[in-house]
Length: 471
Image (cartoon, rainbow, N blue to C red; front, side, top):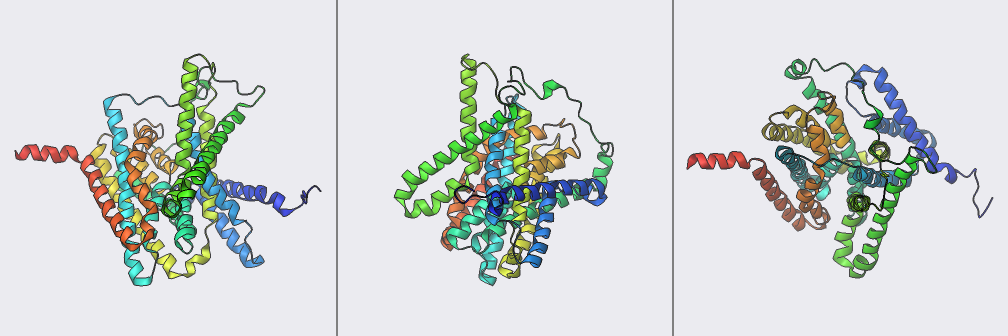
């Protein structure tokens, strides 16, 4: 015993036990998916199913022992940091440049579909919760968490739900956001299964049913001049080191901005800008990762650095690990007691149902127009991403394009920068919507205007062609 620390203290084992339960739930979920036909064909990711298994197990545990088997802080920390670490791992990957005018145009169009999905989800969500605010007293700004949960995933849904809860008094805000995100995964699976089981889909893709086995060589996993897999330091350790050090730099930059700029300014800056900064930990971490990667590329081009330290395969696995942990922890941390209040569950039901329907039909319509050569592939990937995460989109895409032979997966990867640029105005409004009903209505009008601009960009060719025909 040293300084009050004991190896048998429950606090010593709390974090490890939590991780063990979460990983065990995912392994059990994966086993159930393989053995139970309805689960196998449901397209529900193992991390999502595992999260629901843990949620049910914890509910039973509470009934028996009167307390949760988790420390909520640990689950919420895994959700928050999993998002940032996963995006940083993706940003460190080496990607070949987008080539060809059509390829660049499709990437840009993909970004407009993404941002358009966020905007229409926000518009529908705010319309629902504003009406419910006057009818049953629901939190009026809660509707803007629909694109955070559906479009951005559980990490952002938790970030902003928690911010609204702590800053603006949104009761059970964090559970609200996480519930929306969890139902987003369900919506992705239900919509995907519905689409794939239409008579025309079954006929068109009947030849795709057998399991596709990878036919890869070592060159598919290792680029030229990379460091060895294992020498004085394991190669995977290097990847984790780069990811975590980048995240630490992101934290220091956010803390410095808070300490020396926002805190002295107080008032508006602390209530509006500060939550934005900490809520976009993943974006700031991504920016630092891209900056460090470009510095490394420059040093390597000048001959100062001679070897390649990053490995795409390992970085993909790190991001997958972080996102799986984020998903299972986020669902496990939902407070089911919040469903006792109608101000909580009525908006949830309406938001999730409306979000699934509007996202399905918007995505289908716009993908038919923008991607006529591979409309089904783009629809499934975009619908999956706009209701779950990028990995959910890939899961749906693989059902009809298992070898990723169409540009759909390529578009998903490269559209992020354009999506950040086009979606920035909406993201900035997250700190303004809950401040008052006046702020909400002003932001609602701006969202409608932004959505109109996105539609104008997407249908500009058809609009201008009609205008020229009239002349």
